[in-house]
Amino acid sequence: MSAQAQFEALIPVIVAAVLSGIIGLDREWRHSPAGIRTHMLIGMGAALVMSMAALLYDDDTASRLTANVITGVGFLGAGVIIRRKTEVHELTTAASIWFVAIVGLTAGAKLYVLAGGTTVTGWFVLVVLRWVTKRAGPDH
Image 1 (cartoon, rainbow, N blue to C red):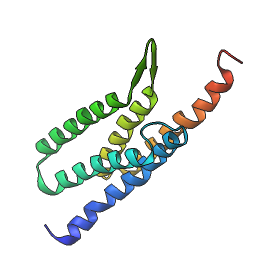
Image 2 (image 1 turned 90 degrees about the horizontal axis):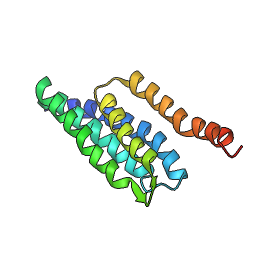
Image 3 (image 1 turned 180 degrees about the horizontal axis):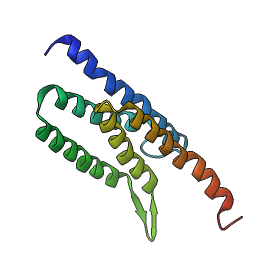
Image 4 (image 1 turned 135 degrees about the vertical axis):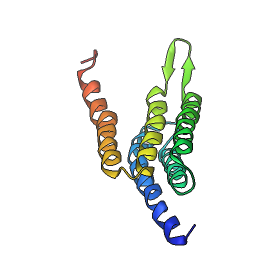
């Protein structure tokens, strides 16, 4: 494998790092247990799997690797969720972990417009809709 091909395969990983960092920044500001670094690493790891698969494997193997990333990240998200009696905490953080893994896979597939647009939409859901629901909730 040429160094040139490997450098080109690194671009989706860098894109995934930036996009995942945008989502992770919100979680960092909310003092969630999984912040910007965790989100970036998950997104980068997912993109790396896709980039590596494109260089080394056929489509069948790449799709199996993708499925395993999605499953594995589900376990990471489950570890973030905290249950206290009848309350569940950090469910949004667990969802954002799963989300950035999918964004990473999308960036790893070099679908940059889709990955970027989805990141903007995810950021809207986390930031803007949180603001709206806090102001329009039952206490107001």
